Image 1 (cartoon, rainbow, N blue to C red):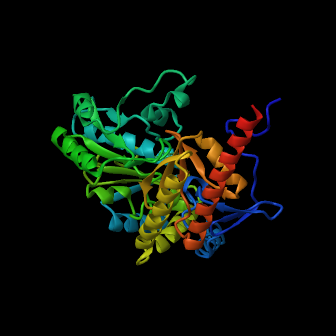
Image 2 (cartoon, protein in one colour):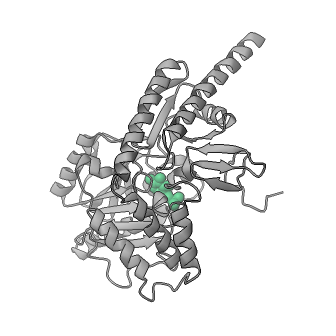
Image 3 (cartoon, rainbow, N blue to C red):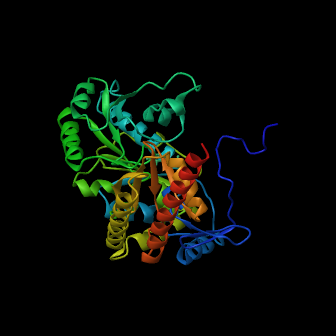
Length: 399
Ligand SMILES: *Cc1c(COP(=O)(O)O)cnc(C)c1O
């Protein structure tokens, strides 16, 4: 018999009742170090006092009015995102996929506004993940998410990541733009070469098409920069943000330049819940902290520290771990064993991490972790590797 909750997820046999900073507590009081942060969402850790304060204050005043009226929290958050980024304007959504949907629609509308409505195609890259709506599974192009859901939505073509020759060849009279993640998250913490990102910006400019970045996972400080593209010194025309933006409250945003957004006139797009006062209060609270002087610098320092320790672990456990990659606090360990076995062995050490494509284990801790937490995670990886090795030996002995 089907479970009351649609069985669409393969869940771990774990549940949590409360959280404190980077820790999650089970109903029986067991403490887990959360180095997955709910898939890069809980950017400031669990139960952050400032976020509790801003959410409770707003909750006592006003929850929802709809976008039929002005929402001061939206104006404030948009002004702050514009001030801190390449963007001139922002549309608020409830999720990452919706932010990407807005980005896709905006890119198409831009060309329509320029008198070229036939330019409705975005070029994406293998290993991409852009969400689970019908348009975003077509954009991501991964068979495992498309299977059984009927015809692909037209308007997406895919080329191999890093293959700029294939990208250039794919550009034609129907191309609207290029859509990519500066570091592929679900695909396995696969970073783009910074030189390639700069080259893609030039390719887009030459072809008169838009560069659309999906920074749903990489954004809001995850890489030690507000957005990951800052590292490459290039700016997009349109950018999708979500995950870390709400620190655990569902909220997303589509940022754009004035030029790229020129087709999005009143009535062209909308959302009932998008940018409601509760979400805006929390997202403004997240920015209060992420934009504080020195915060992003500390993320970069901690990221470097963790990456160095992971590189040492990979050396010491070269039978199990292959390599380390990523930026800031978005790091991946490529495994020689099955990645999910390492995730399980880490959970046995009471440290939560997340699997990803390309046989990678992702470490995405809250951005507020300190050296104690980093050391605890590193020790857990070491212990997990030892346990995996012992288990393998025992099995070999039994043969
Ligand atoms: C998580 C993610 C999405 C989808 O976000 P949802 O909030 O699950 O809809 C899109 N793009 C990237 C890069 C992501 O990591």
